[in-house]
Length: 343
Image (tube, rainbow, N blue to C red):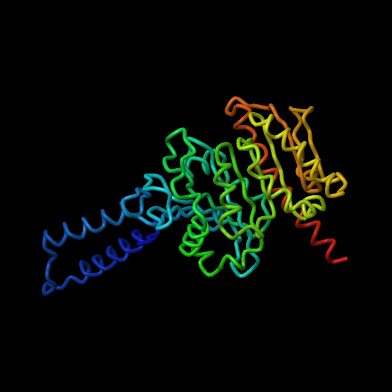
């Protein structure tokens, strides 16, 4: 059963109004509510409050925020889940002004190790970052980990063919703003991977029938599997070189793998007879931040960064700094393409 946080409060409110109406009639013939009935109503109200509190005791959906700040939906006990989690199986953020009648884009954000979808969403303030994404873009965080509390990439059945597709369809079917939109009507998808989410990201791309929908791939210090994304890059080389698609790899810990991949991509471009103007690799200005305008004009980007803050070490700061920049670059690319189409 899928319940919203708002449902119990409405039921309780209606119950209060009904009881209030009876008590103010002043009719002596009105039967008084028995103590047993009162306790029963209190018990029902309490159970409804528990069901709406986000505690995964058979709950399905908890909703939060407001139309001005967007809507957050958290799902437990999905049929398509990697395990029985105490934390949500998936989280969806719908930005303010979302219109399901218009073209819809999706961002699939794969969190790193030792994080739940809840923790990743809150830690990185992804709702704030999504304001920079293209209009009408929904954010979905799937729980790919078998046990998010363990330092492990174990992910149960997540890598099975079609699993994520079924999970995505189920989540969309229970999200009010997405339930009437089949996957075939999604305009494009951005896959984002932070840290240990790289295997989940690769599975989503290759094993779930959404390959042609993925136009943007963003790695946030996540290329721990050296060759995981080479096939996608090679298959989309022309689109990446022209800027129609984007591959952005921002890294600190994964420098060795990322530089090795950059060299392979150079060889791919050379073998295909494609020039390098949309390829950027910055290994030398590690404290300089690339801006969104520059990224929007580059299909393939490799950026090494060592910046940190009192709150985030370099590995974490990659996600904090470059996810919003990547979203802004995506928006600018779409705006530029729209202007060129009008000419």
